[in-house]
Length: 517
Image 1 (cartoon, helix red, strand yellow):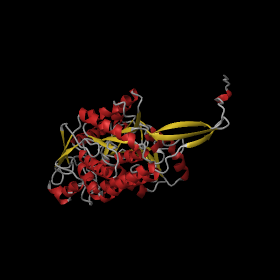
Image 2 (cartoon, helix red, strand yellow):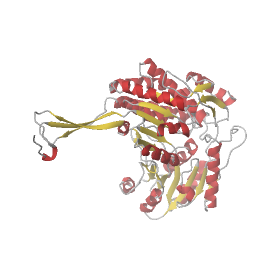
Image 3 (tube, rainbow, N blue to C red):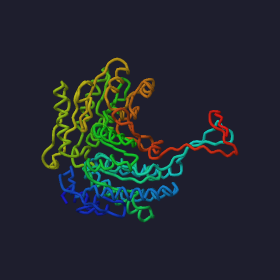
Image 4 (cartoon, rainbow, N blue to C red):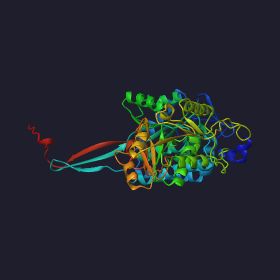
């Protein structure tokens, strides 16, 4: 263990989570087996090796899918409230292990310890939601046009659900899917990011132990590990009716095409190019807080991170100066140290993308207001620490039209009325999260109207980043159209069935058709 890991109790956290120096990355529950290559997990915090995970081979995968299919046939017959009780017990373990799991998330991914704890809290919250949902899985009753008939619809478990998650939320997004899928009666196969494999193994350890202690069939919670080729095992597999994939838009297009070719279902949570509109009636203090956290939280590696700040010309200089001053207060360093606001990017490839974005905005004529760059020296040895940057830009710049997955905030100016700001906000291919800062009721309602924001999430007087699990999470356009977490997102994990019951001694046909024998 490195000095950093020792100082912040990472070794103890790994032990509490049942992790070893070399871990199997393939599991059907009680059974763990992996015959693939070794994946080494290095922390972006200090560059130290955290541990190793064996990846999943094709033969390993076949064992997993067979186990999941077999387990599903038993799990689906268990009453939903009983499945909810199992999820409740899983949640109890998450509460008990919140601190060590939060530390591991922070150390392996690089987000602040508070954000790591917050991510585990999201897991806890969605499990609470799922437990309640287990007693509320409902259909509809409809009146039939035929006398003596009753019509209704019901939802049945879908089958085996494949989950592909990204490094930036290495545990929460998995739980958004699995907690709901489990209470719906599905089995789940999870491929976590190869950049954060230790957190995936840790979560599977918890689930496997709880499920085994409560008589859950083998195969209901499965783990596979590896690069995109391992993900292709699932996307191409006709035995998996639903693939839930979180990641870049380019990845999502490949998944959608592959799954669509076999007429499977896709739940896609992809890129965001999120904007905050700041009107002349905005509260400047709240605007600064929302914009700064949205832009630099998780080092700009959230799909809901604030990428664009669209400011009216009447308050442009005031907002610009306030944001620039606020950036002077940002503390960059070890994310396990709660005195710091911003940790590292996930790896050196992410650093290259960040630097390229800064070069591109300058090449297109942008004006750098807060210089970026890579931090070096003591505490920054991993080479993954960068300075959050701000650039004045135009919405039509190519770099602004694409998602920059790092702490680069583009400030854009608009004039005239709100229509012009909305045109700028909606004038990108992505449609995940959006916000408006205003104390003008008409502007707020206009922003939320059918002619307003075209995003799946639209907020008033809060930022773009962060979402509660009670609402459905997702976006439109190149964000993929998927919905996870709250509201009625559970329906995607089930198949809908319409039923008609004739309780008479006659057989009348629909639409008044006569067919006498």
